[in-house]
Length: 138
Length: 210
Image (tube, rainbow over all chains, first blue to last red; front, top):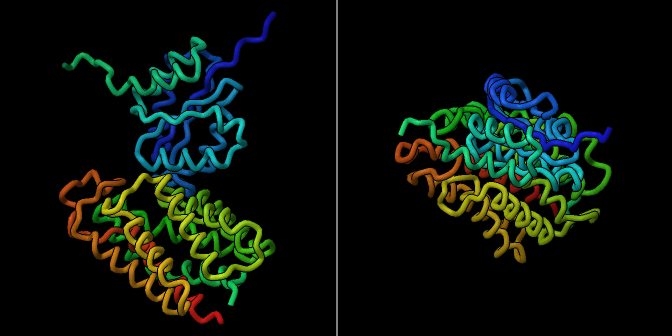
């Protein structure tokens, strides 16, 4: 039997550990069991904040060779994710994309695309497309 | 009068001590227009730096700056960790493996740090950020570094203070403060304030080197 193709992993970064975990739970509902979906939230001391070292660890955990899309809740989550890239080996860092999409909706859409084996670029595009997600509220 | 690794470590130690003293004042500034953790975050980061500082002294000023940067990125939550971390990392890269620095080399490294901060944070002048204190301070050093070193450092600290105060009436356009829109006017920027403390510390620690 052929080994399964690696799937694009997803890292969810929030200032709040509970928010990150909640988004992970929501996105996991849409994803199969093979998808690596990692939540990382809170600052280095557990307070509200972001932690580049733990984001780097989460990216390592989420990568199975196909790359990783990172979503964050506020600006410093993106800054910390960019700093995390500098802490990773160049080959892994080179297959990580940081999305500016909304963290909850973007994670759900990205998880759907990733779990059906879409490419890194397609997963990134799905995360970004969540900005224009039609929720039916007009 | 080259600047040695212990000289630079002394400046970082002084910066850390000043941040500890100003911790509550920085936090109050950040409570007004941000998420209220700038003093706490910077103090935590620099306490970690100070704790490790004796182990950072073996390989020249460039290695010292890189280790300070990595320590800040991993201990400071919030935007200031990646931003100050990038500043010191880029400084360290610019310094290379030199064992000592001439003032002009330190100034070039500070410029590299500033460029890194701008690249990472995408701030432009008058966004009301740390860049509004950092850029004029480094520009002041660049025009005066050929003359008296003590005066050059004094002009940098003065330019940082002026930059910090000049943007106080402006609307913040970066970070959490930008969510406040017009309500951010009249509040002193916490990042520009901590950057001013950095340049005051560089002056106080390095002006006496001869």
